[in-house]
Length: 367
Image 1 (cartoon, rainbow, N blue to C red):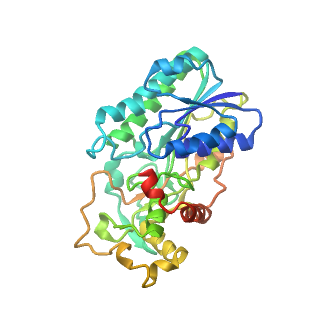
Image 2: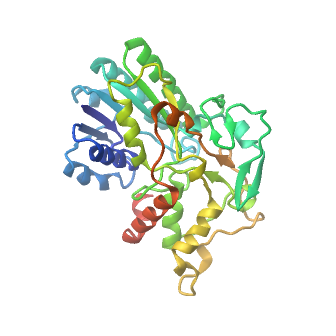
Image 3: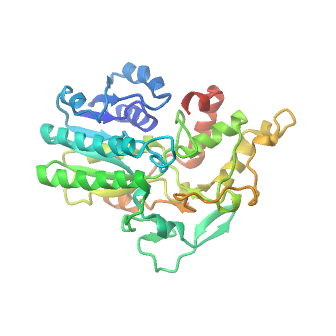
């Protein structure tokens, strides 16, 4: 089977490519990447050594796809994945739309020509911001948890399900992914090729290019070990905000099932894929874990100036897209695909920490 993986040298794309090759010896993988993300070139030689045909190209340019030939499936892992993209003054709104939506349109046109299936790696950020921002929460064990009365459809103590509202606002980033989802499903229906939409929780693992607005688990651990300043933002500066955690390797078995020609066409095309409530953790809990993992951070030789300050008086206000609790319920993936994540959060955190000790200036290299 011939696969095209976009964003192949990014953290998710490269980790997923390696995992797919480890799971199956019948795959012929071509990867395409424009290397716009700092540090992405570090994955190039590793993928080539594994037999990946790696193309330096840009999916925003249709001509870069026309010369590639045909494929059985396209896995779209290319995106600007920051919820602040286009509004933070560091990237333009046009650039965001061209990356996340324009590139997807070019891929769908290519799938139409090739009669190839299409898998979109989407995001939890397609879910409506206002009800999540106003979600009533309480604190338990230094982490928020929702206080639910049954009046908000699509959410439970297990997380946010696919039935939760996707009404705007969802952020410019979320809207590009949601629009990509809709177009992908429409293209698949109109031109008779299979489409699957996987709404992923927070990805994390060794080698991730962590930043404050994306890859938060990796960013936090690397900064902690390197002694860089960290700060809880919003929510009274206590670090109680919660996210789930998923290793990209866990996606490989699901994608192999979805690309199987025998996959049922009656199965829902859109599912949540995440570590779920079992993987969820607050920033404060992550800080406590870091204290135990890097005990030297509490010695006189390693001053505590980098540790987060729990002080509501100095904490910046909640930003427009900040949410107290985002945990995806992936029960649908378990029911429909027999899929459940296998790599737990503790394993992921230790993997990142081990990597950080081998790459002492990773934040500088990848920021």
